[in-house]
Amino acid sequence: MIGGADVVLEYPGVMRASGGLDIAVRCIAARWPDFVIQDAGAGRFDSYREIPFASLAEVFVYRDSNALESWRVLGADASNANSMVHLIADDRGLTIVVDDRSDPTMASIVREIRDLLTGSQSLVRAA
Amino acid sequence: MTLPEPRDRWLAILREVNLDGLFSAAQKQDFLFRRLDEFGQAYARHVRGVDARILPATASLADILTEHERNPHRVGTLLEAVAFQCSPDILAMIWMTLLGARIESLAYEYKRAEVSVLRATLLLPDDQTEKKFESSELWDVALFRLATLSKADDQPVIEDFYPIWIPPQRPADHDLYVSTPQGDFTAREVAPVGSPSPRWEIHEVYAKQSPRLVGWIARQAGGPAYEPAAVVAPERDRSVLERAWNALARKFGQGILTGLSPRDHG
Image 1 (cartoon, chains in turn blue, red):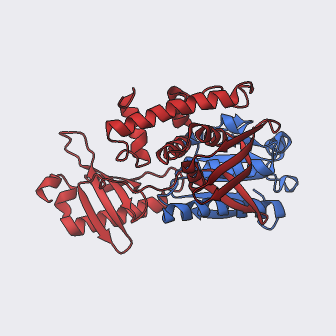
Image 2 (tube, rainbow over the protein chains, first blue to last red):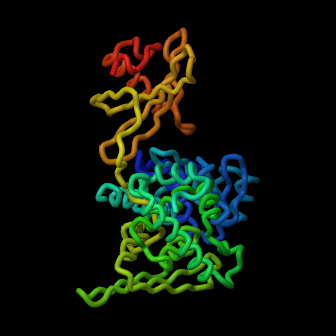
Image 3 (spheres, rainbow over the protein chains, first blue to last red):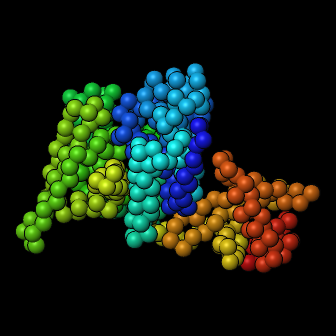
């Protein structure tokens, strides 16, 4: 990443890793309708329905296939800033890695994922 | 009717979301699988004519098991919705959402002793097809308990559904239990029968959440070997395992972790 920032959202024992990833990917997909996902083994998913979250612990969500291609060619180049979100999940929490948390889109994505994950915990605790 | 085949699989899935106690009686199991069957029929009716690349055409018991392998949390959500006695049509609406449809609108109208009407509109993943649902079944209002909420740029969004925490009805299966200021842990002997080398599975126990598998401690000649369960960033769990090991050794003595039967130590 280009000077990336990590945001760690914890949900120990409340949520599965697959659920944390699913919620985060769904949220990002709502912002980036042409999103493309790569898993840690470089497997590619072009649609939400294809993704087997239970077998993933780490994914890269690209804004679109052009962003994926640009990252493949240029890597962490400044021109690729804020066109990809890196997600790492386990059963304790989700780590969101973005280039610049002050970028409006990134800030909005992080805020919404935090709402979704911590909001779910509130429901869980109230039950 | 009792649990269908593969029975062990369904039992394990129910146990995952702590619904095994609720659905332990044959009568309750009959309700569960009858409702899942009705849900499958309602789902097929609602997606009739929709391209199978957008949403699958069926939601049979076999389809649910397949989805559980890929996305177990979605099946947990569906089973909780059944446990709340949601109607087959609303179960279909929840399942379509879990598979990628977007909730465009949700409305609920209530008048005491007269009216309870839930209306929902979904936008399917093709971003074109709308599906409308309406129910006057009061129990369907339970879907709000499963909704994931957020404020996207300060605007309301109900993104999806997710299972809520249901407390287990049975105590955790363990051989040893230890409470420490940093957390409570259970240990279970998981070495194969007759093995000379003890191997302990360690869980962190929470008051209102399900226990979390921290990892394993194997007793070896050079001392304990810690195997964190976490694939990503295992260092945290390694230190938790060390802490659990020390607390267990203090409470039960080194012998308990080096080969004596747990039953000898109660």
